[in-house]
Amino acid sequence: MDVLFRVIRDLKEVKFRLDDDLPDRLSRRYTCSFLLLFAVLVSVRQYWGEAIHCWCPEVCAANHEKYANIYCWVSDTYYVAFDDEIPQPGEPREKKIVYYQWTPIILISQAVLFFLPCTLWRLLNGRSGINIGVVMEAAVASQRADYADSRDKMLRYAVHLLDRFLLTQRSTKRGCYSRLKHVLSKHCFLVYGRLYGNYLTFCYVVIKLLYVANAVGQLFMLDVILGYEYHLFGVHVMRHLLFGEEWIASDKFPRVTLCDYKIRQNTNVHQYTVQCVLPINLFNEKIFAIVWFWFLFVGIVTLLSLFQWLIKLTFWPNQMKFIKRQLRAMDSFQREPAILKRFVENYLRRDGMFILRMVAKNAGNPYRIPILSVVMTSRASVVY
Image: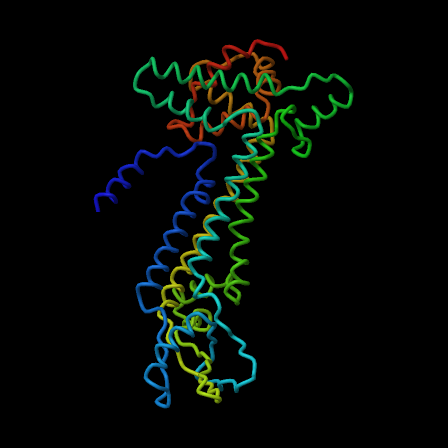
């Protein structure tokens, strides 16, 4: 117990990396945590509870019941409604239930898939020439520091990292083709690269698309794993809850299934069909109902976040509006539009704007980020 308390105490000191926004963290942190928690709960229920119990006819020996429980758990059972006839030996079993043994593995695999876009984002970020997490941690820490000395040190460090990144990621070529690509990169994401100032922006938009595709795609992936139209499962749940319709999910997560097994006695082989209760499926049904609604929520939130980022990062008037609002909040508004435009389009460019917006999203006060004022003071008058 003391070890558990120490682990919980240590977890409070863990610092999470600041290189994305809240919708991203819904996927890579909270969804992964929920899925892993569900996997642990199902595992505990399976291995420390009664996951399956089969009823054997009187002709079976007393020890057959234990054998049937073990055999039917490790093999596949199948569902037949009470009004339908049981298939004869040799006939195909249509509604096989093949997932209940693998539910913890399924949930863990889903958690891994939700974390993959984050891993890819950090890999791409590492190739950009700047560690966004370090810049944002320094910028955010400077706003939350209690002492002016610490605040100024952290702020200068963040400005130094950002300034070095923005100045080094530039092309020295002056040919017509190079200039054309620079012009196109200002208006089109398809022309991207570190030297064009939109590498991070392009990568982040792609990662956002992966987050959306992952949340929605996993609903359809479970169609294959669970063996039915899982992507409509939440609709059935809503009908049941809102309109009082009869619950029709018994064939999707059946509590009662059938299992065929054979017993060899000397030279004779006897086949038995037994009826089994799957208490674990009542648990699975509730978990996958929660998962359906959570995935839908995460998918919608991430999609809205994607549109929001596209609008903010694609159109230059939005960039100018953001900079003006930030400077007004700090009483350092630059009155000359030409200098301000040159500062945004030629110095910050899309990647610089992306980093500043990400700092604003992770800062305590999104309408006041001092790092911008410091950078503006040192670089706004330089002509690029």
